[in-house]
Length: 240
Ligand code: CTP
Ligand code: MG
Image (tube, helix red, strand yellow):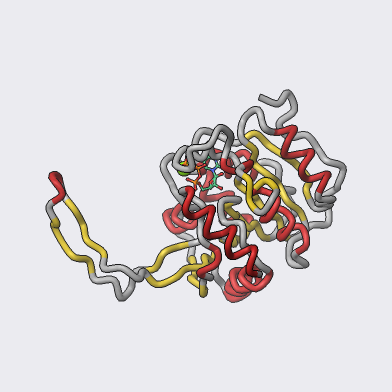
């Protein structure tokens, strides 16, 4: 583990309004490699490089904090330097859960920040358009916004022994993606409460009374979970 988890990379975030937390601290158990998912090879470089470069080049993002897997802080810092990702302010050691990694990264965000974007490095193909869409509702009275897509499959609730208990009406169901955007105050308030087990930040903001909007997601923003997801993203990158 790094001796200086909040090691500064030389950029001052003082004037930054919009901070992005890039979550890369997972182990990638379901991907099953000998290294964390963030360092799986995608299009000839570490998977993390894709989202890091895209957020660094996004004009709507002012500063970036990366949550790295324990023991992988130096490789993350080196990668940021290789990419000349000038908005990377800090690299923190992630926690045992996604929510703990968010908490660690959020602690690095400047008090003056207005907006915090939270993005999974496991979704490499983030683009400016989806960042713009999630920022929209924050100017319209919402505390947060998530990109989402309709659920294409019929959804069933299943009980012990694999017995179908119920087929769930899916007309009002969506699958949430990242990047998710929040007013910094709302996200900080949400993390003052119990957050263990939360799989996304929006659920915590909702639970603490925040209003969260859904905006159009993007099918190419798929999350790399298994080897076949990695192959699919690789194909999308090659054909881009
Ligand atoms: N994540 C994190 N810290 C954790 C767990 C997850 O920063 N303790 C990040 C991952 O790096 C990923 C995102 O949260 O970008 C979504 O998590 P997931 O897809 O589940 O990644 P892993 O936890 O790495 O994969 P697995 O569950 O298969 O181990
Ligand atoms: Mg996980």
